[in-house]
Image 1 (cartoon, protein in one colour):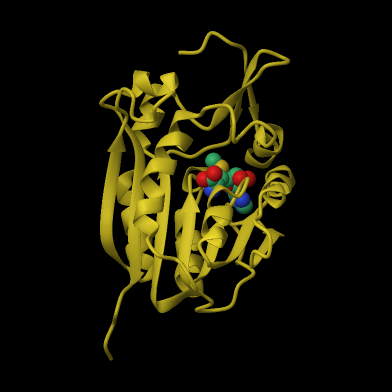
Image 2 (cartoon, rainbow, N blue to C red):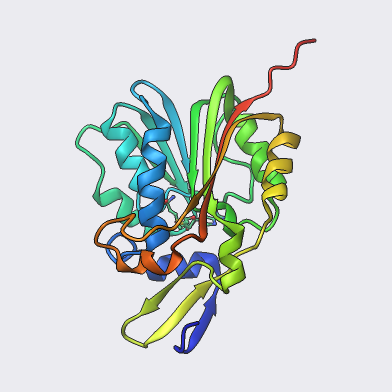
Length: 233
Ligand SMILES: C[S@@+](CC[C@H](N)C(=O)[O-])C[C@H]1O[C@@H](n2cnc3c(N)ncnc32)[C@H](O)[C@@H]1O
């Protein structure tokens, strides 16, 4: 466990503070997520995609470079400012400040694909969020959602970074949901489950990331691949 002084802040303040170093400070969970999600997303050319909690635009820019039309939503202005700096020329991207605990600023069925990575652990109540994801997903669409694995909370871990100036570990408000909470929120919203995956830390998994080694054999990331249930009437 960290010996550093800990400072607890709200989620939004935490990400505003983290934004300038988020992409470069070598967070092992972010590194693992970067290995897992892109192959799952597949060919996104021509798709209308929402990146919910888009942060610094890791996936917004990845999707836009591959021909998707992307709406990136996030409530942290600091993270959105970083995202703006990395959009490819001519990209079809809208970045908008929005709180994911409120109704989303997208029409019913507006998206072919919804991506949300490492965000669910910050939402206290999962069900309204999943209901909104289902609302904006077209009937033949898909949602791919990743989150910090619940087992990470057993190690007293939550989203955080080290402020090199103050020496403090800055922790942001996070919520420990169980796998059953995610599954039930998805089913109640009207999704079917294509796949659930749990990803473990492995030595050298994200090469050059020594912070990954201490998670060897430990569940780090949980990923849901969802599609709207086809209910015949
Ligand atoms: C760990 S970052 C992930 C960013 C990006 N998806 C990625 O994978 O790099 C979590 C993001 O969720 C955003 N977030 C958390 N709670 C939110 C909320 N209620 N409304 C909007 N954004 C939120 C944060 O501002 C932050 O940018």
